[in-house]
Image 1 (cartoon, rainbow, N blue to C red):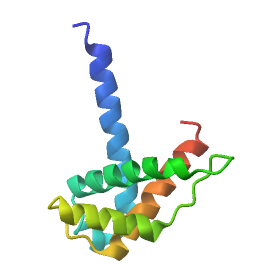
Image 2: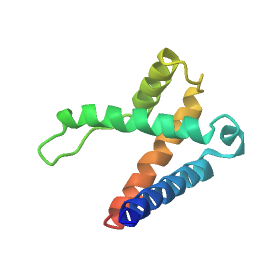
Image 3: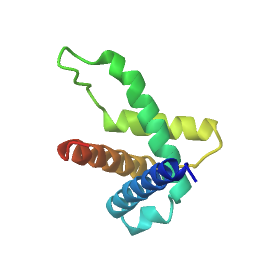
Image 4: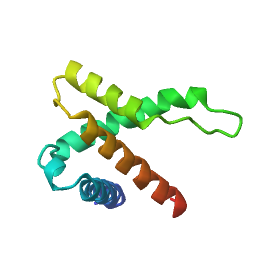
Length: 112
């Protein structure tokens, strides 16, 4: 039974993920929530964060990255098509990208 700390960490991570998805769904609007399943949202978040990691190499002296939401949405759209996900509407991906960025900004504001 020594794994309870690990189990709690996994459950806490799942709860955080669920909060993140709920936040994004609330920003997408009803019509887009029908387009994006939870699996789609997790997939898009993974691709978005992976892409932001590659952009971090281009950060300026203060560590700021110039984020082009439409360019990120196009990147997700292109990668999803290649990997057999979607198809995702570009405008819906822009909403999702903005929602994810807002969510992360909110977390940073809370010091998490």
